[in-house]
Image (cartoon, rainbow, N blue to C red; front, side):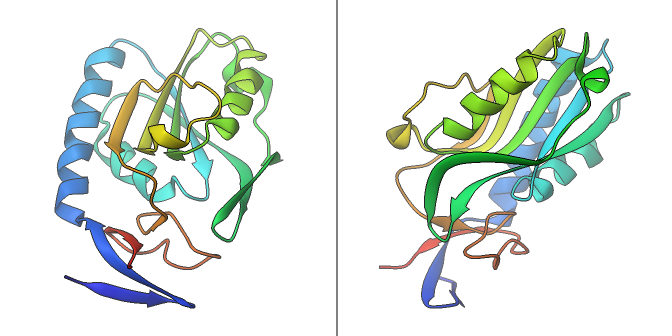
Length: 179
């Protein structure tokens, strides 16, 4: 099994690039089916969701707009529980539009609970959440996820946009901490 070293931790491959790309195809098919007659606004949550969003959007061959928001709640391997919006979105981009939020991971649910209320306050026509990973065991706040890439147990994972203290985002597969 492939392992990598990031800072002081050893990680082993958990979800392969091939598995990810297969799931991306399924997600895009579902989005195209649901939004074929609309021009949605994709909101990409930075930094973690950039690779997931890029792969989805390269295959989403219908009219759409793309916006970015930067939300932070992690330090190292732990969520701080405090959400910061350091790259906000203008209300005119959201109002009366179909919004698709692309997130890297729903862990505690705190970030997406906060962000869902933030977006709803701008009066969109609809809001859908697409999350690459979902950890239901960690959920503190209930979050409605419309499309989940992969449901995983309580693991610390990196790769495919997810990082450990800033490193590992560039990996094309997902890795978990090795025992």
